[in-house]
Length: 64
Image (cartoon, rainbow, N blue to C red; front, top):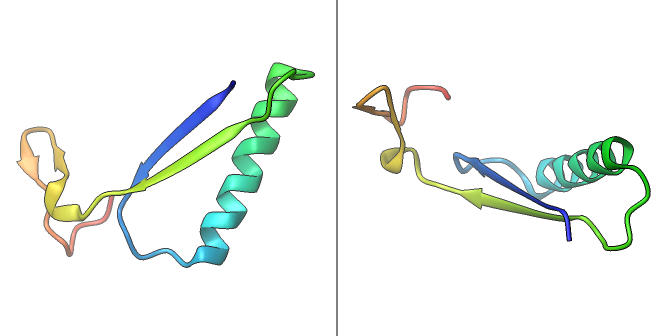
């Protein structure tokens, strides 16, 4: 089964996440060709306090 895992900060609406799931699924289907199994997409929302970039913790006011 093709699986896409997406990690991002929280705060997006369910409608935006649904659109992301649809577009990622379509991109995988177009790129990989006919698939025998469904495409799975998992969105992992991680609080910005648990992110770090280049050895420095991300502050909530920072943008990824």
